[in-house]
Length: 377
Image (tube, rainbow, N blue to C red; front, side, top):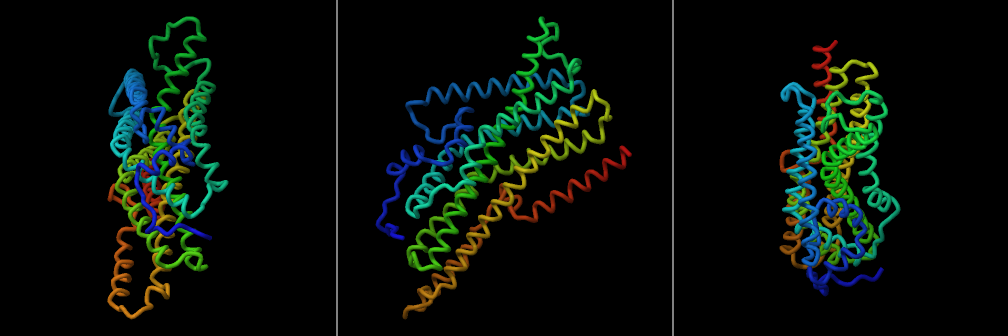
């Protein structure tokens, strides 16, 4: 495989930025940010449009929040408190992503640079995962509402939004469907988009690392070339953690809340047909949250493992120990040892995204379930 030596390339944002966003495989995920008023490209020609979309998102957020407070009878003992917290998480996540949009642009730029120079193409699994995200968002927004209304009909929720005297009944059902869909969309769109972006970026970066590892072992790329690509990878991982550690933490908290909400609903509500809608929707969201939660942790863990494999391959490579300059070899080895501390993906430095996080989560939920069972035998 013929590749352009890295030292002959000039990596500048002006050279690659336009091409990246024209052919970026992660464009469908970026669409979820765009419809909510967050532009990674930051083009001045469409600046007014993105301002309008961002204002629209905040207006919809405010409308959904008012609708929730309208339903609250007891703020501190109602299950709706979970929804209010989820609403706050969605808004904080939106502003965090907007603040970090330039860092996300750089991440996409250098990922495209790697794909172009290593001649990698988006594989089938990546294409399905990336391009199905907007459709998954629609399913998450509308399917629970349909299930809710099907189980609730003919007696809808006791909370009468916008005064349930609207006639005819079909108009009331349309307003009811719109408000419920709006709440689900606001609660999930931004955290869901962050989680999918993080998963897809880790997956694509792992493919780059595997390509470099295989090329190094097969002799397709020299040790010097791989080391230059490797230095960019280390900077990318550090930048990825700095840009998305807080949004990922908020995404994980959002998923974790669904686990607690499902357990609380299971023990709190009776199992008659009038209240079964709460449990059915809780099960749906628990399944969706579990998939997203596990995917974020596993793909982040895999990226760290793959990068460490490449680091060890470079450390054991014969070229690094060859030559007469022993001090230069020691300097290269010490730098590779120090890189181990940079190959870390965390959730805002509070926890490292490794497989043991899944075990900790499972034990926490088990403990919470046992405590609830003592109060609701």
